[in-house]
Every structure is written in C-alpha cells, then in structure tokens.
Amino acid sequence: MPLTAPACNRQPLHTRSIRVQTYVRDDGQFDLEAELIDTKAYDFPIRGGQVHPAGAPVHHMHLRVTIDAQFNITDAQVAYDAAPYGEFCSAIAPEYGQLVGLNLLNQFRKHVRERFGRTAGCTHVTELTNVLPTVAIQTMAGRRRQDPDGQRPFQLDGCHALRVDGPVVRQYYVPWYEPAQAEQHEG
Image 1: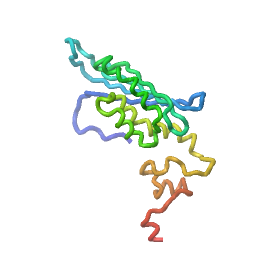
Image 2: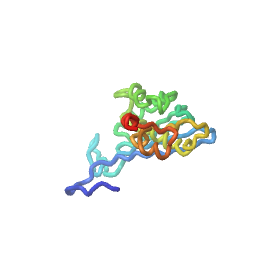
Image 3: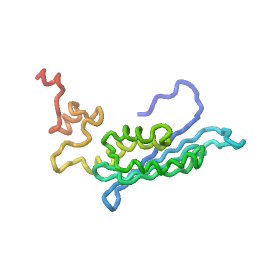
Image 4: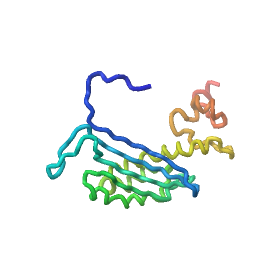
C-alpha cells in the first residue's frame, strides 16, 4: 500500500538511493555489495565557480563485504565514483578493511560506530554498513528456513512480527512458540 497523496504541491530536492545485491560465491562465502547515490533536483554552485548539474551524483559510494555462513566478515572493500571533495573523501576507503573480523549479528553497528564514528570514517560509507545485518539475514533466510538440526530458526525475536510470543510464531514456528506471561496465567 503506498503512502497517501501529499497534502499540497511540492518540488523535489534530494534523492538518496541505497541498493544492495548479494551473491553466493564458489568458495561458499557470500558477497554483499551496497551502493549509495545522492542526487539533487537542481543545479547548485560548487568550488571554483563551477556548477554541479541537477541529477549528477553528489555522492556515489560502493561497499563490498564478504561473509562466511556464520556472518563473519572475511573481506571488505570501498570504492568511490563521486564525492564532493574527491580524493580527500576517498582517502578513507582503505580504513574500511577494519570491518574484517566483525560479525554482522554480534553488536555490529556498535562496533562500526566505535571504529568509524565522526572523523574516523566516511558518513556515507558508514551509513551503508547499517543495512548489512538485515540484508545478510535476508540472504541466508531461504538457505536456513528449514533447519535440519531442529534448532531454533535464527530469525525468531528479530522483529515484532517474529517475536516468540506472537501469532506468527504460534502459527508457523510452533515448537518455538512461548506464550506471553499474561496468557500463561490465564490458562
């Protein structure tokens, strides 16, 4: 269902697009490739009396992380196609090698903030890292949906719909359903 129609006329100003594609590799690992593109809907002046044209990327960054089946990052790369300060922005790209060794499901966003907060990183590349945990879960979901070991599915308690005391788990994940405290006392 789309949003309701706007209450009044409006003009576009800024568009941020974030796209992530994932791949299974021949070595059994997975590549998550994230891309951020910012554009403006109008021309604007930049340094040296030049004009940045409407629709041309102001920011265009790429991030690839390679993960194993346990969500551990084994490789990380960053590349820049556009940045407002060119090589001064892109000089930080090698620092994102520090993502290697982090686990996407173990306080990943906290560790990223600690390593790349403020002047230690690029705001836009760091923003791309924020989508990686949920994208990785979606990447693995189909592969892990039917766990042959009978272990609790990893996605349970990952969002409000998949809370273990909720109707989705009661209907689709019966062995892991845990009635809420109120239900236990009523019954």
